[in-house]
Image (cartoon, rainbow, N blue to C red; front, side, top):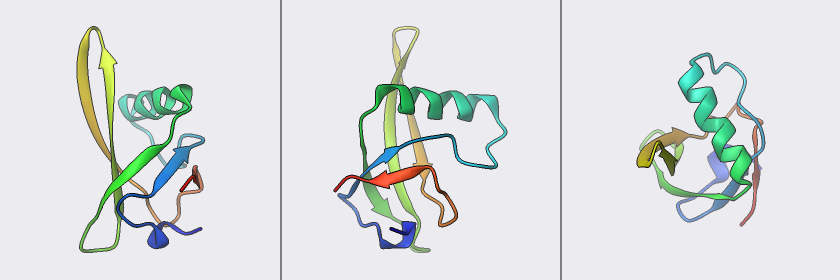
Length: 81
């Protein structure tokens, strides 16, 4: 499945850090998502057709919110439903 086929409400599982991510903070977020081994839900497809999902991660007792896009070239996810 391609990222352009995803719609709001779809669930995907992140399987690895996408190619081209260089910021250590972003790599850390992806590693935490992968370690949880739970799907994430697409909450929006923007006007350019890019699907977005949000994750909440607890760090040092507080919640962090991260909004991540699924790019068309990404091969780091599988469709769950």
